[in-house]
Length: 88
Image (cartoon, rainbow, N blue to C red; front, side, top):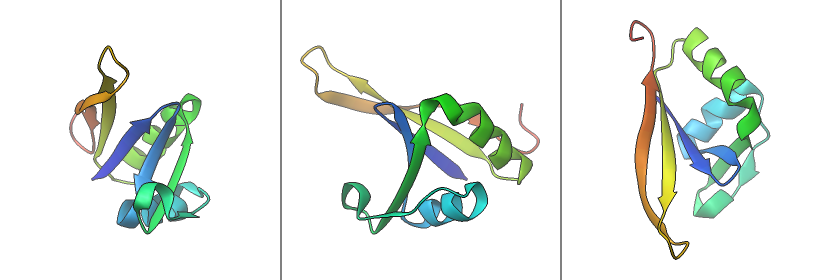
């Protein structure tokens, strides 16, 4: 399963999933992204492209979105979408 973490205007992958994102999607690796050993990401406008590729390559995917509280702090992260081979 690939977990697409929404952070601001980007979707990001971390550690082992970042390695997959770099290999499968051709994303540029970013060492030390948000305190992880490896990270990578893309602008939210390209989400459809990368979701389609992930499912095409046989990955199950989940979108995780952060919700902010009225004072601007991150309140929680919730799964917004799940898809994969055989589930529609």
